[in-house]
Length: 271
Image (cartoon, rainbow, N blue to C red):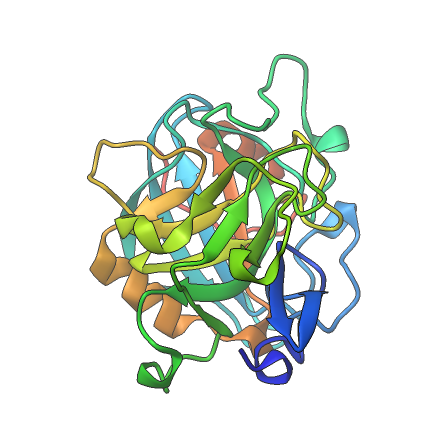
């Protein structure tokens, strides 16, 4: 794996561990060169691509994904047709991302935890794409890309120092985790994108291994990711450009309306 090529413009997020002569933890999940926007205006001017996922309520499994883009100083413009998506099998809950969930969540709203079956709600940077295809077969891809191997794992063991980290298990003589996702063995991971949830640094128990990936079906919720048909995901991955500092906004309809002006979000259709 070429670390310079994969991570040269990226900030700390869901970490990727690899071995290049010696084992090293590398920040490998999403280009970001501007300073983080303030919570009062969470979508900074440098972000020119936006993915919006809206569900009907906190517990809904089904939702809709919209794409938006803008030129500098111009309003958001819709891109293409919306996608049908699924989120966690128990819905969504406030996650750890760009916006501070501690100031956004109100009484009674769910908060994302490890193993709760909820996808994270909030605003999140996007990281590296990954998949089964070799990197040299994706020359048009602008996102950084990690070709999964039989030893690629995502650690979800809250006791591990590599929690919420993509690792090459073969690079560790004595792994300190007992639970991890074996990425190459999960068919829905034929193509995916890392979502920078609970990433800088990872807090044990707040959720791990959150991705955008291929769905198992239109009514099958995930363990905590956002999923869609393969063709839609292929289009989405090809559209994203790290130079445009893309963000994912994921909220139930009521929260989206509440934050639309506060976060300068584009309008989306009602339920």
